[in-house]
Length: 200
Length: 200
Image (cartoon, rainbow over all chains, first blue to last red; front, top):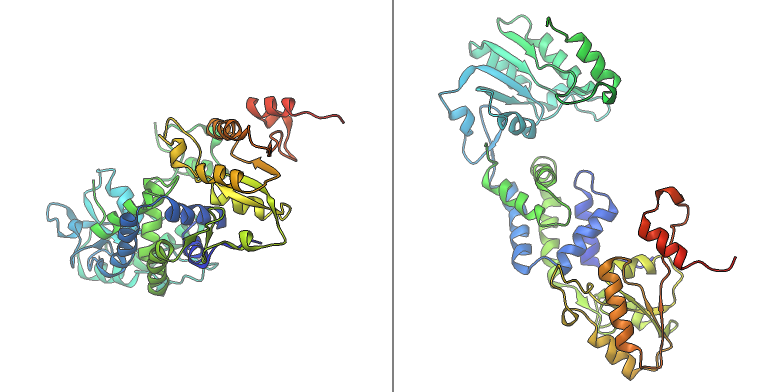
């Protein structure tokens, strides 16, 4: 087996740490950087990796990423601070926010309860959600964890944890995607779509 | 549109420079580095990007990448230095070498002639191939450029360039991939497979 020179092998290993990047893709990226990426862009890339670890803060309000103590959403007083949407990840927050419809605030759990991955309640931002419910007079908590086993378990856990507090707890709807054909839907989605049916 | 903090946006931009990495994938990589990659691995990643640009040399013989003046293949005197396999990229060299069958040496063109991408003869290592043919008493040049329009044009160009020199010029075979079903093959592959048919 002919091996690449060590600097390339090292970079291949770095790339394989990224999600869904296998050996072949990592090789492609590393060789691309060596052969095609300019010296300037490569240096910037190298610096940005360090910056991303050093210059980002976590919003003390919701767990979003920001450059300040509080993120722009938490600082926005025109938003409804009595309505909290609970998501698993920062990416989910951005996905919902960019639909440009929701006007409440968020709470990022930083994952979901997972037995297989060894993620327990104490690994997630659940305590801070409980604190928020105890301190603030919230109107609604919308559970927008994923429609996966882990997401469901997490939503259930939070629901039970908060059920004795005077706050409305809702779960986002699951069903057939808009524009999707029935025949392409999986069993679980169909089940959820049936369960969630409404008067028409 | 809610934007990520600048360090994340910068890193997303760096990742989109890689081949076949779109905005969504780049976002996923950048957020993964921020949320999941350890400080240690991120620092290594950052250093390796610099190393790859600084510590690699190009083999003076074939254009392969190496840590010395000449690569391990060119230095290997047990190999047939009269047989030269011409490839477009370093990756192609590794692909063929790792089949562990070929015992000649290589010549890396660093691309293929492409009008659409503005790659001309002078952008490729073609002159050095001509020099090699003039200087060395080569037996065979195997053209292993891709079976694409660019690869074919490049192979043709080299063939015409070298046709008056006493060296055998061959082209690797194109046809149905082994284990592949006829019905899945595209038209060009079938055409090549028919053209290249042999007595059975």
